[in-house]
Length: 326
Image (cartoon, rainbow, N blue to C red):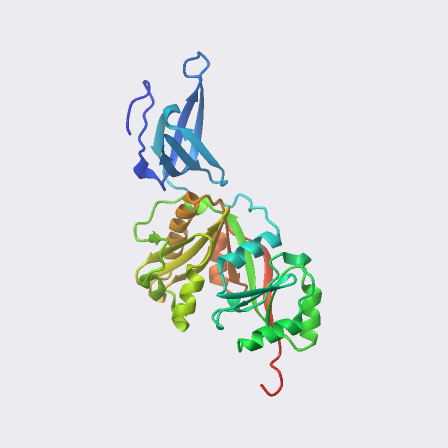
């Protein structure tokens, strides 16, 4: 669409500009002497049935009646800036994180969920309390037997509120490792940049994507089940160079498995992949993002901080000592 709307106004955007940053001016009271104009700037995330959806940098979605537009244009992207972090408690983020990385085998015991995936990834092979800090004590005897049946060590995922339990178990010989931080950030700023045609985003787990994440080759069948699971999953790939995964559930978009091949690092591909995944997640209704990163991974933490992510909380894993004679 491109038409004149008065002496100084003109609409210069079309549905093909979905995913780009735009400025849209609308009018109310067109027939009245006191007509009022409103400007909306953000990412054009959809245009269907005469309604445009523009996602602002704060994550708020503004719906605009096509008939109310009097001027619109594509505007240059601006650097992402931190404008506050999404509000959420530990329980909410723990629960969505569990569903975003679903283990093939799970069983509930009290407040704790035992998860097993043949030993592939600690996240899918540890017991977690999806309800967060208020969880009761885990049934360690039951968990030990459950994991022993699967020839796996007993591992607990512990976060805020589990400090006393962690201290007790470490005193009994459990070992702590896998220290990580859960980061959160607004989703719209990630997409508020020029679209990168190098990145292909699909909802299908392809061989090209799997080739870009070597850990999947450790247990191909299990990896496919875990990676393709989740409420709604998007995969971003630059074949032979970079991959990323994003799971959308409600307002949350959970990033994981973001990797750039060594020969292509420092070229902005991680940001490009995350940006294109953000466009897909915005279109699916998400407005906030989260991800997990090892606390000692300084390069990754610097990247995520530059993209507007901030630390929400930390967690780690405790592994039970191996039974004697095993």
